[in-house]
Length: 184
Image (cartoon, rainbow, N blue to C red; front, side, top):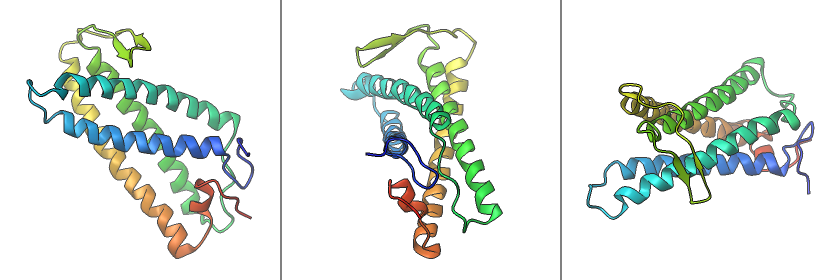
């Protein structure tokens, strides 16, 4: 089993991290949209935010691991068929998605800890509140969180469209590589 990336193939760990983060982001987006519609007396009114926070902290840890992994096991070289514009836009899109994801996770932490309470992660451990009482911290962080989440979803859809364009129109190995297949 190929765990590390090679010069022409993503390793299984990179592929797994990519798809787990994508699944978690879309799941968290749906959960976030749903939980803000709940009424105070709804059974899930208190449960859903706790699940959302716990997954958010696990996702933050995963994202830190993913960044470290990119240095330990750099991604494969771009395909020779890529134009300069494709290479630059791919790098910029990945950097932007990473920055936005960290922004979402940090703003979520600031929302959750604005009242000084730690975040309990699935009853496994707690993350202390470090910044609190900053005026309207929860409101400001909440607005940032919402706009960043929508931005990530829209950009990730563009990212998906680009991968499908490579696969269906250009007929290159871009999508196959992100599914863990080797490209020659």
